[in-house]
Picture (cartoon, rainbow, N blue to C red):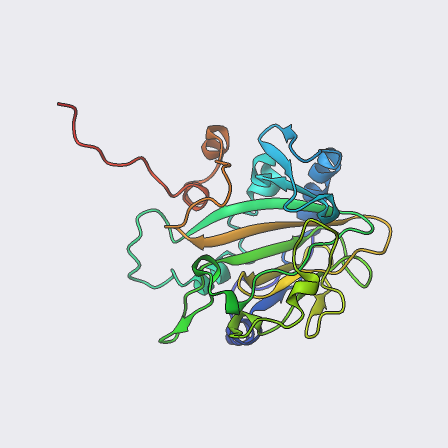
Length: 282
């Protein structure tokens, strides 16, 4: 087993997240946890977009050049269920979303996962640039007010294989979550139906990770990926967290079987919405 990082949110975490829009948690997952996730992905790597494997759905956003997304990956068993409220990041995410104040009165838990997927990317594949503070999208917003973070969407991207130069690393533009002006080069690298990547965009950096590392970032930061030029696969998962009053990004819903397997806390995180209160039948 790896020596896991402290679960405590540090002053440096808060400073760097505010400054740059992201932090990297080294060895957030143990070697066993990484191996368990890879075993699941081994069994699903031939899934095609539009195909279902149980309750997991093959998908991509703009085309096969992005690789394979496995949406609803938390339906794939214990390896991905435990990531819902993993102690390496869950308290940090809650803090950055801004729902950890002592008097927070939400009855359904403080956060909600609106989308979760694994991604397998092969040689030549990448995803283009998207988001940015200038868009002022409420769902993805970054705010800091009166000593507290109030972020609309905080993503946790976990690496299941080492991601170094040539491996199609996630690319970010540090500080762009606060930008007021569109990036002048945005159109040359934006997500599109044709192959594109963030390579060569001014200000963008590659985030190199080892298997088990986790990247925590506010969704309003400009992000995408480098093109993978090396042989082999880039394997990651992304869990997108927001306030519990949010709603699902896609038409997927968690299964009753999954909800029945989870802890009460995990149930609240993936399905905080309860049936509406109705008047008694007349």
